[in-house]
Image (cartoon, rainbow, N blue to C red; front, top):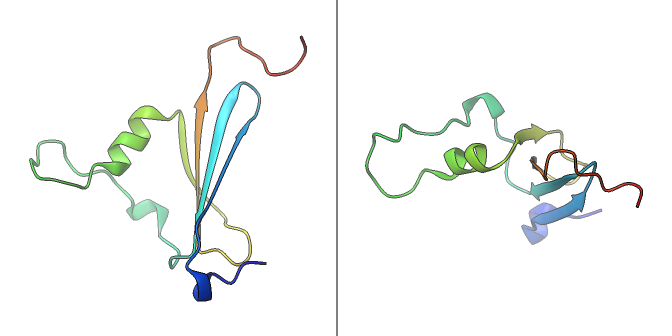
Length: 90
């Protein structure tokens, strides 16, 4: 068990699942409301604030999932590999 409050830790897990790369980013911040996490308008010309836009543009799935005990947030991003590719069999 990780004591996030004491260590302010983050954890990045990456694995291959059904011809897709899956990224789980866990942090110790207070839980976010997924519905409020929206990209800003690209018409607003100013530095910063484009992370959500880039994540949703690059990844096939971006999900705020239930974090395991001891963490505040889990961001899961999935990037499918080539169509028809499989990690099973040879």
